[in-house]
Amino acid sequence: MACGLGSILLIANPTSQNGRGSRLAEQAVEQLFTLMSDCSIEVLLTKHARHATHLAAESNGYDALIVLGGDGVVHEAVNGLMQLPKDERPAFGVIPTGSGNDFAKALGMPRSLENACAALCTAEARWSDVGWVNGRYFAETLSFGLDAAIALDTVERRKRTGRKGVFLYGESAIHQVKNNFRFYDYSLQVDGGDPHRSRSITFAVQNGPYYGGGFDICPEAKLDDGLFDVCISHPPVTRTYAALAFMRAKSGKHTGMRKIEMFRAKTLTIDFDEEPPAQTDGELLEGTHFEARVEPEAIRFLYPQRHPMQEEDCG
Image (tube, rainbow, N blue to C red; front, top):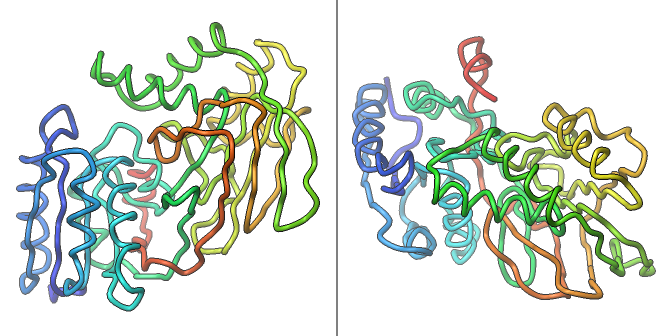
C-alpha cells in the first residue's frame, strides 16, 4: 500500500502499558511498514516528563507526528506542536496504549495496536481545535472541583496499583465522593459577557466528549466545531445523587439530570473564591484565576475512516 502519511515521526512513551511502551513502538513500526511499504518512520522514546513537548516542538519537516501512549503524551505533544508556526505543524495522530485514552476515543481510534495502525494508514487529516488555559494547551479536557480531584487521584492510584481504565476511575470516584465531597464558589464570565456568581461540585470544560477513561461527560462535544462544551453540577446535591450522576455519565445519560448545567462557549474566565482541585488532560493546574479559550483549527488531527471492525474496537 502506498504511504498516505509521508514522513512520520513516532514518539512513544516507554512507560505506557506498564513499561511495555518500547516494545509496542517496535510493533507499531513493523505494522506501519507492512501496511505502508514506502513510508519513512523515525522513532523517538520519551526520557522524562515534558520530553514529548520538546520533541514535538522540533517535528517540523515531518508530514505526520504520531504518539504512542495515553492522554499524558498527547497533552505534551500538543503543547510542542503549538510552538511551531501553523503551516509547519505536521498532522497529528495517536496509537492509544495509555490507561485512559480519552483523546484517542474522541478521534474514533481503535483500541488495539494492529487496528489503530491500519486506521492511520487511511486516516483523514482535518483541521481541529485545541484548548488553552493559563498559558497551557490541552487536547481534550479541563476540569475543576470533584471531577478534577478524581482525575488527579486516578493518576496517583495508577502509579501505585497498575490498574487502569474505567474501573480505576470508578474506584477513585467512590473515594473522592466519600471523602472530598464539597462545592466551590466562583465568578464566571462566558464569551466576554457579564460575570455571574455561582457554585459547583464538578466543572468540566471539554474540547472532546470524554474524560476519566471514557466517561461521556459532554456527549455533543466535537473537536472541530470551534467551541468548548461545558458541564457543571451545582449544589445542593447528596453524595448518592453525585454517585448516580457519575454512573450515568459513563454513557452520557446525565445531561438532563436536575442540577446539571450544559452550555457551549468560545472563552471562559473563572475566578474561584479558593483554590480548587484543577487539571487539564490529567495534568495538575494551580491557582484560583483561570482564563480559557478555544484555539480553532489549530492542528490537523488524523481521524480514522470508520468501518465495522473499528466500530467494535473503539470505546
